[in-house]
Length: 277
Image (tube, rainbow, N blue to C red; front, side, top):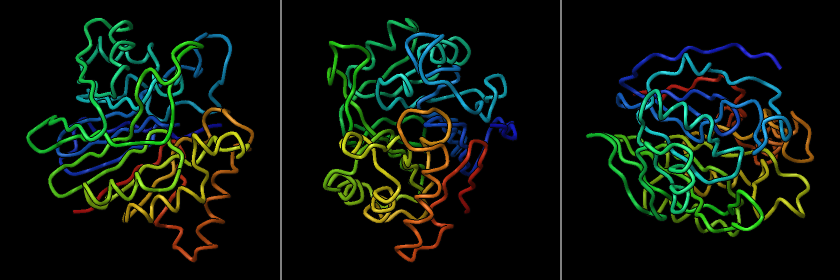
């Protein structure tokens, strides 16, 4: 799939979100450049010549990426923790890497000079005078191999920048919804929520790990988010649904709930969102 490449500004004084592809998002806010789950490799796999392959390139070429100040690493699955990309980022920018407990060991082994802060759910990390990151709960799991299932933690992130709040879910199922209502209760309603809408079929298997688009709409409502952007779809074939099925299912879910489609967008790589004010 062809996409229009994006060359981001080096610094943004306000707030801007650029969808690079899958769960990789560039968040520029209050002069801080943050990238989530960075993955510029051709495959989401432990082996370079097999495994899920991209159907579209990253919307921002690695060399066009501005200097990254912070990496938010949600968990250790191969489509989220990519050692090759992390090594390149550490060598080029020496960013602060914030990740849940246990993933620091994996990152340190891949990039020995990485600056890593590992934390538990609800831990807060100040990354600049104006920007604070909180690790928040997610319904998911972790593993890199056959013997390390659930031995590292997983999370989402809430980014507080002055009066703004951005939520990045990472990978998550819906469960009973309590974690999303607790995020709203503890941190407030996000201005924008980055929510996964892909890799959900078949439901009998994926329901415990990934939301489908209808559940993602419920998460947006539970959070009280002003805006939601659908991520984690259309880049890697990780499950049974078709490439465009998440977009179509999201549109149908919004119609069935009589919600404005503009409030929850199924963003293609290259989409840029500006937070006003």
